[in-house]
Length: 113
Length: 114
Image 1 (cartoon, chains in turn cyan, green):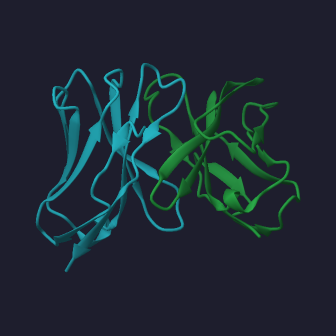
Image 2 (cartoon, each protein chain N blue to C red):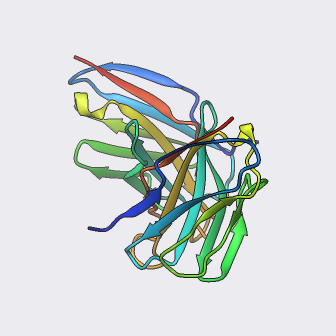
Image 3 (cartoon, chains in turn cyan, brown):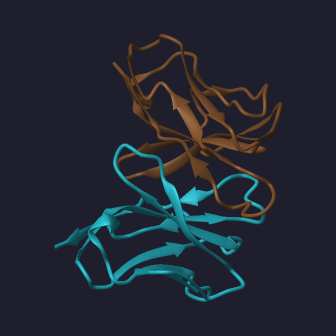
């Protein structure tokens, strides 16, 4: 049973527009959520996170929104830039993350010039 | 520079030939883990370790072993590799203070088992 779901394998967005990546989860025990970005031939790098006590966290062009009642979070990138083209993974953790992160399958974001 | 290193980066081997992928971190992190990434399946945790001599199974531990004899090192051992272990492997570490949820990943090891 997949606990973290990213239902869009890929997303194409024009440069300068807003990119919205979605993630759904089923485990109500998750209390911390993270987004990772991955370029080919590199390891994932941490992008932004949000605690379940918040509904929004912003860092520059990146904003993560959390809707606990819907068990849904989204990552907004605005404006989208060519360097944002990468695979984005949504991840979730329970408590202190003692047993690691549960990842979604990833969404390949392609920024078109 | 704070980093997680893995060796080798690429490995082609044959079924049944024991191999070890090394992982080392220089951030004095207590927590280390191994993931594998497969097309359409995302990242799945193989094993993790909360500290020296403390290891536990993740979601897909079958066919793998790990050891944590030193804090900085967390090798992944495939005693008898099989073709279904062909994958991209990532080691990760994190501390237990500050941003405890944020894991730092190594560059990956692409393993092919023929």
